[in-house]
Length: 203
Image 1 (tube, helix red, strand yellow):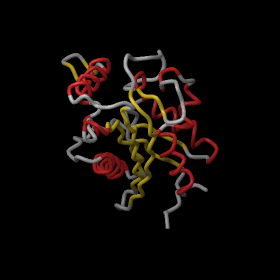
Image 2 (cartoon, helix red, strand yellow):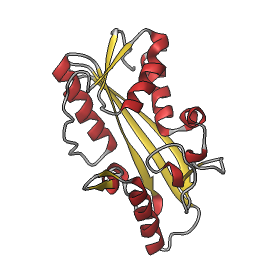
Image 3 (tube, rainbow, N blue to C red):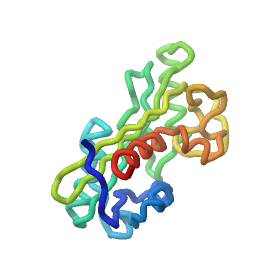
Image 4 (tube, rainbow, N blue to C red):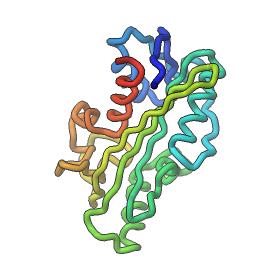
């Protein structure tokens, strides 16, 4: 049985403004005030696990412990079948440069590695999101969302972020980067994880 959320404030353990705005918007109907990690001057803990759940747990529990508030964290990325599930938890690492993140570099690397192994088409991939809601005393609830699809090349679309320009969700012929933001949110991995979280903890 999922523990229901009965507090008035929720800490979103992220420094990502987009994720924070999305959560504020989604939880407004439930009368929950959402605050971000930056607002609480929280450092970003080191993510040392090799699974999305493991890293999401580190972030949620660290934030809940530091503030005494229930904390929600998200760990997400893309897994590519022909690359054995890579980049997975290293999704953002593939984009790291000395000057911040470059996702064109990351998408190019994914394409080059698929070409190197002569991966057949369609090149199946999944965007995955794991949400962990942790309470200060140590209890947590886990919610997962998966958006299946396939990778295309060259990149297409100007919207979205990350690997969106090369990802076509199942049942569509446009990439996430060619979609309207709200349409994408309905079927995205994070959208699905959030839906599970709202259903489990609020409804």
